[in-house]
Image 1: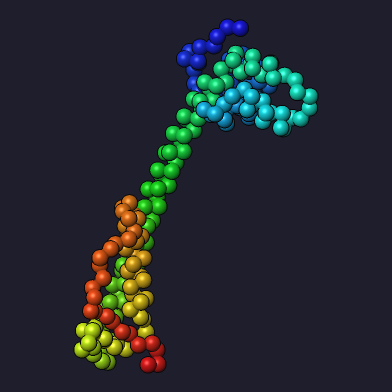
Image 2 (image 1 turned 135 degrees about the vertical axis):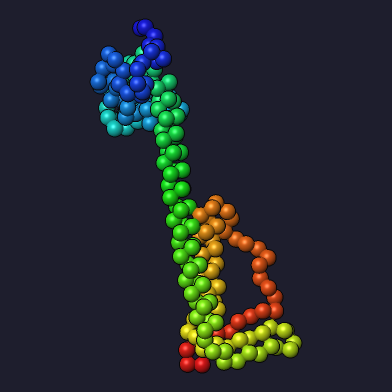
Amino acid sequence: MSSLDLQAVRGDVWEQLPDEPDHWFDRFNKFAKTLGPEFTVRRAYRLYKRDNPGPEDGYDLWTEMSERWQWGERAREWSLEDRSDMTRLWEQRRRQLLDADWNTGARLRGVASDYLELLQKHKEVARVIDPETGIETVTLAVNITAGDLTRLLKIASELQRLGVGEPTTIQGTAQPGVGIYLPKEGE
């Protein structure tokens, strides 16, 4: 058997080669190519026999055709190309997700800003500073809670940090001795 020069092949070496019989290319395409760098004749033949049960014959012929049509080299080349395609696809999806996270975070920050303006417009009902802890409690006549606002800002921050590829947790931002109390409806 003559050695095939894959360098001289025009196009993708994992496509059907000139003079490669259809039935052998189909076997390469279905049972060998997808193994990529893990390709061995034995593995490809086992996959074939799993789908085509019957007498255990033909392994020597598979070995011969695999060598003639350079299935190992072609499977590795296909694997490299497939990995490159997947990397490009995942990078594109990552950029889309980063943009979406950034935009959603910006919208949530706008909502939080609107809530802060509402808080400033409402009448302060009471303001008390606990002499033991120094925590100031402000009672306002609104229907949102500080917890709602805190969660909204936290989510907005996390989404925007994701949008620029940063960690989503920020440590050391709490200020002891400051608290806000917003009464529930009817209080």
